[in-house]
Length: 77
Image (cartoon, rainbow, N blue to C red; front, side, top):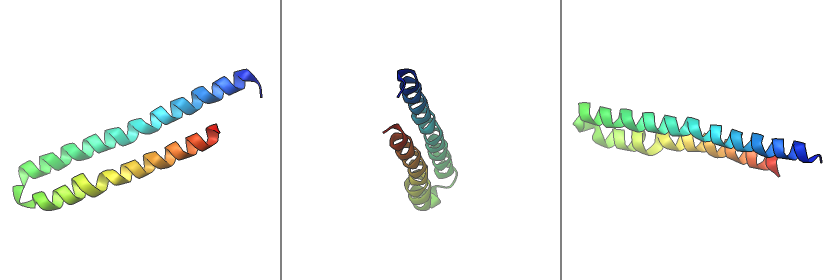
């Protein structure tokens, strides 16, 4: 394979991995901020907010990130 194409491919995969990590990071930060604000507004609902807002929802962001990273790494092989 042409070395120039190989270098461009490695750079493209690196950028894709970086961009794939930004979205879930922003989503998790927003989710955690809203959960803390919800706990501040309604302290009685703290248990449910902690389970769903801080426990389960961030896992969905990580699943999308892991899926994207897996595809990018498999393309880079």
